[in-house]
Image (cartoon, rainbow over all chains, first blue to last red):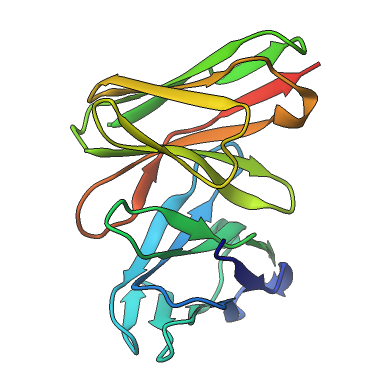
Length: 111
Length: 112
């Protein structure tokens, strides 16, 4: 089946630093999604991308849908302690809306 | 304003016993999904539903069955639990745009 490679696996940064993570696939997706998961909770949708080349922001978060439709990027600017968590990318293709998830990037922010 | 609830939140069961997890939504969404989350594997799709009594398999469906007799409820059953099914199980629902999921808070299942 389709697989997503998400990197880096983990990041340790200082508060105030910018963060970049990405997701690549061997297959094309029509929709890319980014989620954040806090401990003990389900993932929460951050950003959805629908067109190749699209750049979308949500506060300090910016995500891009790669032109090849096989990758996506998430940037977090000026990180704060509450950014700590696991970030997942997901690709989606079919009308049934099945999503394939990356393995996640665990973000730790040091005050 | 949960919109989606899972029960139980935690369960410990013995190998070989049947287990049913419940997902309940109040959003009237057509699509519902069951995923499992394991360290190093992210979220993997077990089964999904695209309407009442309409279900299909995901990538890790062996050992699991599902039922959806009402729009609001999607049940996941482990017919005979095994230790490899120890995991955190998430239910999700999907609206139209933005196509993303709303996840429940998860069920942590331990099979001993």
